[in-house]
Image (spheres, rainbow, N blue to C red):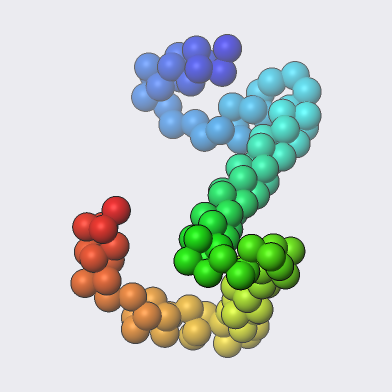
Length: 116
């Protein structure tokens, strides 16, 4: 139903966005809640997958960390959180711009793409 409505509207060259389409449905707040719950769970799933990949790589390289799995997982989650806190302060935009300019160069990105 949603796809048919989007195709119908796009046929007339009228640009609509997802919230505008959902607002035309009966029970629009329920669809909005379901949509944002989906976004939150998608983000959490991506974060869990990335953290699990880091945990697996660390435990494969250093098996002694497997004995303290809860502490290792806590550190894998906690260290990026603690290092990201300065970016949400008033001077955070300057830190983000500094990291954007100096932290990653195109050569590093090319090496990562080639390795993948």
